[in-house]
Length: 311
Image (tube, rainbow, N blue to C red; front, side, top):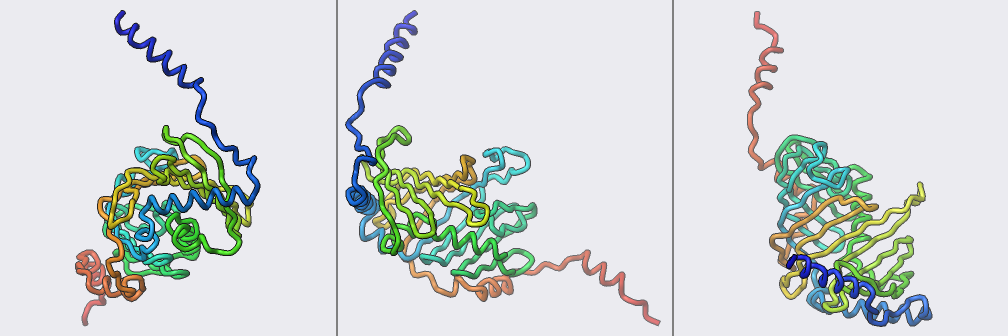
């Protein structure tokens, strides 16, 4: 009975909280467009300051290592058809549009892993390199061109990237800014910032009212051919100070309500002086040429079997 006496007041207290009046919320629909834009830009300044201010804006390179996992069609890594587990990776960026990612995984080919979710079985190291409108991949079979649709998806990823948006795109012509109102996200009060670009992408950023750090980035876009609407949600967590920049060391992505992958960063460094040569096809070809080659006994056997007998 003592337990019941302890539980009932808690339930009553929770019910009172649910009906308690909240702090006055600002209705975005009552603001004039200029007022709404000014409010959104004010929140953006606070957000950038919270991320590190000039230290954040002046990041031109990043090197991060960690683990990632892709989720299956049911949003579960335990789905037997999509049981990839967690994959170790090293990610190199020269912003805005040069990227090199090195994977250690069970799959034999990872072309478009983060973009398309293709991960056939096998094993070995995979290296994906993108430089603007070009891309290559290195696996145990050699160096190959990235498919055109994978390169196009990478370019879209660059345009929708949170850091590229704040560091490079806020001065673009054709952007519109709007205050999106208040809300509760992860049990925290947030302000929503809305930004729309000329390509009809809408960015919605949930900013913690207390820390001014981002909790969510929602990117809404529509396929030009099919007119289908896609909503991509990026969830940021575990912020840590790295070289003067407050960085989320955990990120989860959902597309149209389905979780697609999760990333845990173990270490990151900024502006370490990455050579441009890292982001070229030649660098992959050189690495492949230097990789140890193992003789295939079966191949030798096949060659000897097909050799014509001497007279």
